[in-house]
Length: 412
Image 1 (tube, rainbow, N blue to C red):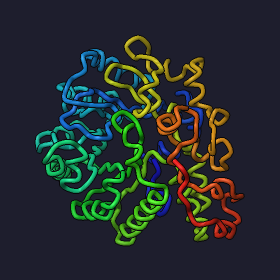
Image 2: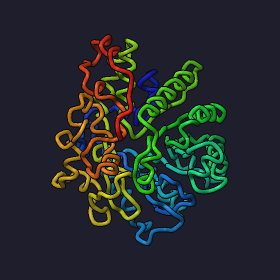
Image 3: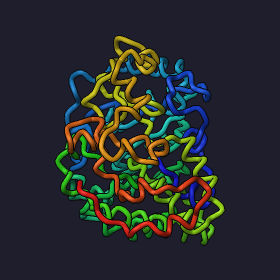
């Protein structure tokens, strides 16, 4: 995640303590932080919606090999032992699972911060109050457009209004929540409306996701926005973040799944001779870019461990037969070893990019979806060849960046 509000304006939030901690690169559970990775847990494949970009191919059916309650509780104990700081309950739709509140409550009791990724449609007033009472740290509610546009994308009429009701119920229960919005060709023009909704509903956080070609989303490569449109989207996000800041509104704004955003923001600060440039470079260096298989991992409803939720075609092991920590630390697995130290494996533009230590090759799932090679360049990298090769030293030569040519779309 790229914290636009932190990088541009120094606003600090809970996630920053993990996002910009020292000792993350190459983390194997025994990192300087002493913590395991953040774990996305797809507790069920079942969902009451059918979204076009769903990475888990979720539908209305419960998978026959879904972990039982007893197995799930044992897994939570395993994560607590490995000092996992955060579990992100996801799906499918996590609230579809009958024992969801029992599992979330148990994780909180074991000292793990619980967050939820949900479509929000099942969060009535009672559910919002129960979530708050359990001590859930954060609820992320997904919207992928305004009104009917969201409903078309999410496969059910009325989904927007139901999600909006869930947002309002969380706000009424004083439960911290935020929006999740996946940018694509069908909703690219609604960014201003999303920011207007954030202001009208007093929503304290928003995550703008770049499209990842995985699951049903693997068929959406041609529905992604162009590189120039991606840059335009980020400019809009930065501008609206600035407007919130000037109004004194403490809205946390993040982008997710494209580490080019961090480089783009840093270059903007250099171009403007901002005194924040040096600090931002140091934050990005600590973060280290894409951390799939390093500081974030995913476990699906069957107990299979993956580098992230978008890479479910690569399994690292199963928590039903082996502890999560053992799987995560096992660099005898060449795939896991490659994830933790990938610089020599990356091909294409990534292999010679001067920003590699700040980006770490971006998103591997997109590379594999487009090129059939997990270690190929990320086709969603929108930085120009000149930008990735230009000699810019951190905190110095701010005048040099002004000579960079205007952005041109790279071939995807």
